[in-house]
Picture 1 (spheres, rainbow, N blue to C red):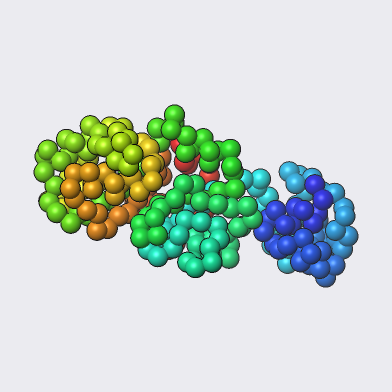
Picture 2 (cartoon, rainbow, N blue to C red):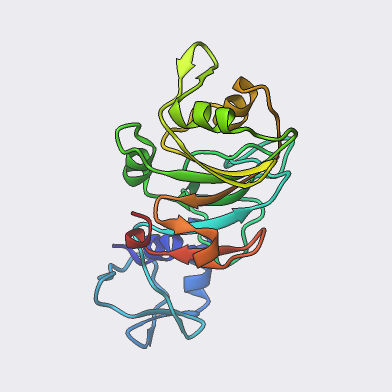
Length: 229
């Protein structure tokens, strides 16, 4: 791989920015200062450093964000702040995107990656990836309501939701686990039983959970692919 491409892949800067950094003598390859951006390096064997800090190359990266309210699950937007806008500097944003989406007023666990093939597999209906939400309701929920949610309700254009799991925490607070991701699904499911969501937070996605990751609202951490499923 060319040295300048390697540095851009590591999130050091754009191609033009990286060329200037190389010319300034801030890059070392195997402890030798390199000022030629055209040289080829072995990204798996050579030791590349920037300002004496060793860089770690990864073709794919995986981050978990505890998404706050008021931020949209998109890579760019002309009106609202996006999840990419609020990421700290250590996150390498190149080709990064959210896996699925959380509504602007929904908080919680959101996976971000640049691994398109893997993200597509996670979102495939055939995978039946579990997603658990903490749901605060406007009205109390009955045993009959829970039975309906768990066995499927009609939402959107006469779509019958797949079986779900409900854990009642309080009279108007539940944990709802679903294996699909239709548009506004949780809100639509509660609307189908004549209730309304007043607060929504995703707390689990696949093998990831906010409790185990221990990240606060707005915080993000890098994880390994093996942590996800």
